[in-house]
Image 1 (cartoon, rainbow, N blue to C red):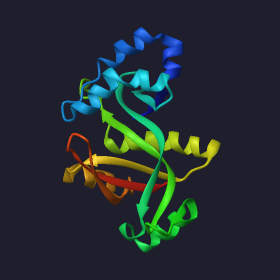
Image 2: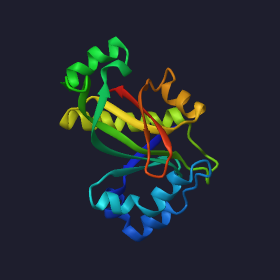
Image 3: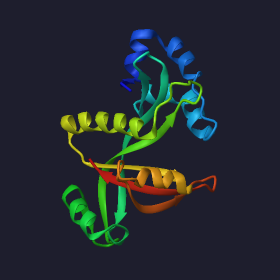
Image 4: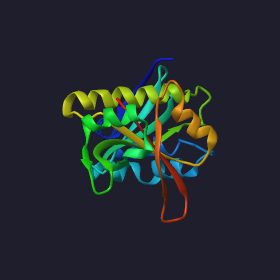
Length: 190
C-alpha cells in the first residue's frame, strides 16, 4: 500500500483549520482513547504553538488511515539499562553523566502513534512506523540527531510490536504518570 504523511500545519495552510479540524474528528481509536482525544482536542493547538507536530497519514485513495506526533526532548538513559553494544553506540550521540551513570541525550520523541479504526482501508503498525522513520530521517538530514524514543503502556502485545525485528526499539526504563499510569520507555537509533 502506498501511503503519504502530511504535516498538519501545511494541511491547515492548504485546507483551512476548520476543514482539518473536521477531518481529525473522523479519527477513531477505541483501543486507546488517549490517542483519539489528543488528535481531536490538542493536535492543532500543539502544532500551532510548535510544541509538537502531528503528521496525518493517507493511503493512495486519500483515506485518513493514521497519524503520529513528533517532538524532541532530552532524556536520561541509565548505562546499565541497555546492552553494552547499545551503550557503546549511545556514547557517540550523548553526554555521559558520571554522577548518575547515565547518558544524557537529545532525542526525537514519538509522542503519539495510532491507526484510524473508522476506515476499512487500514494500515499495519509496521507501515505506520515506516512513515514515522522516513520523516525522522528527513529531519535528521537537516538538523542531526540519531536517538528516537517513545513511551507505551504495560501491554505485552504493544511492547512486542515496538521491539519486533522491524521496529528495533529497546526497553531502557519505566515511568509512572501523574494519573498513575505505568509506561515503558523504549529507544532506538536511526
